[in-house]
Length: 241
Image 1 (cartoon, one colour):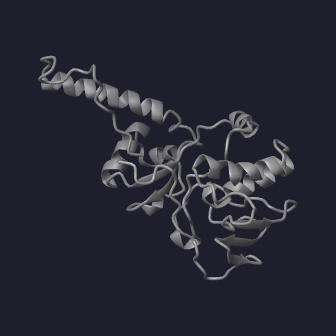
Image 2 (cartoon, rainbow, N blue to C red; image 1 turned 120 degrees about the horizontal axis):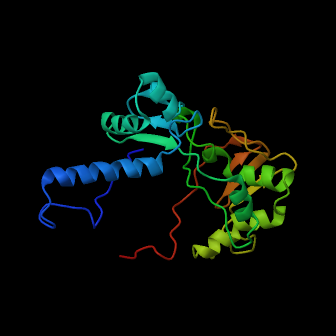
């Protein structure tokens, strides 16, 4: 959300090309529309971008922008701008623009590591976050490793642990070895799977029994111990201007 057209360097602007303010405004309006067309081309479809968080209009959460536009009898592009203005740009969405074919191609590349831009989540948070907040790594291990056999279990684990740690310069993590920090996840390779979905995202994965962070057991037999031993990890760029 919050799509706004940017003023291009070659756009007419008062003081630079002598264009009248009205002409400059019209150029900006056209550019705004072009940006919205590119960013929200699927708004009119049933499976369009889906709202996952809203500070004001909770009734919209879980609906697609196309659904809301039809309910209000608005043009989808107009709706995007109205929501942004009404809710002070505080609207989160899930966008559908990835290809499963491209995903599998990336998963087969041994130099690509796995991560998630989802944050820590809990059912008490509410809203409808992206399912990756709960299931990124279990999905790789359960769906793509066990079910689809896109890559091996060993390679998947390496690309979740030691490979990203090395790239970030965290040389004391990511490998089981004396002197390294003990960050461990114990899971059953025959059971692990993600359960979160776009319709019901607040679901924990299955098949994980223990989680150890910095040598301290945080999850034991699927139950939280109440301990919080985590700490920020600073990579090579820490302290850079």
